Length: 320
Image (spheres, rainbow, N blue to C red):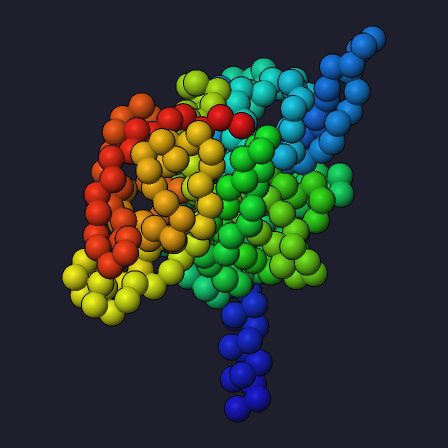
């Protein structure tokens, strides 16, 4: 019996090693070490470091917005020894994502996966450049899904939701690097170290892909703006039965001069949906603020004083 158990353990470890080795071989060529520079009187100075993931052969790389900050460019070092100058194409601090472009036309792009398919306990591999050690690989599991963390751009604060939590070792310098599944597909962008054995990554999902496309083509990502602060709240049972919804987002604060204020939304209103899109938490409210709605009047359905009302709101563009 002991021999059988030992053999099974050996086979399991061999399979684990084969997966991690395969991911490393596939992704190490796609992950660069960044040295971020900022122009100052008399030249440039180093502003920080991090990692980035090649996403096209002609030089586009994905990284974290906080890695590049307000810098204009820097240098990207690849595992094959090349050091390429890069410029910042666009940043979106509210998702902590940025796109840069290196002066090279033969990069090895990584395959982007879909974080929506991840499961807790699934094996993931992190590739990056922690503490300046380029081409580092660590492995772990998805510890939790649906985490969130706050981001800020100017006076605007937003919560990045659907964040991946992993126990794969992440350290300063890993930010902007790849979190990959067992097939080597990038499912997240490592962005924060929340504590010992606890790392976070922005998921690669349909929303992320829209942000990347906008940053690559326009250098920015536009969002509609309602102008409220709120939180989830359950509906009274009778109201829930009436609208077929268990809860919504309660308005706890309205920004003066905002679209919500001009439309007459009130504190304690319970937002049910926006332009027909159900809103049951803050993440859903943020997801409803798509750029296509900027300048358009939409129906915001709210529960107020025992009644369901439809309030027309003309949405504006979010500016920092």
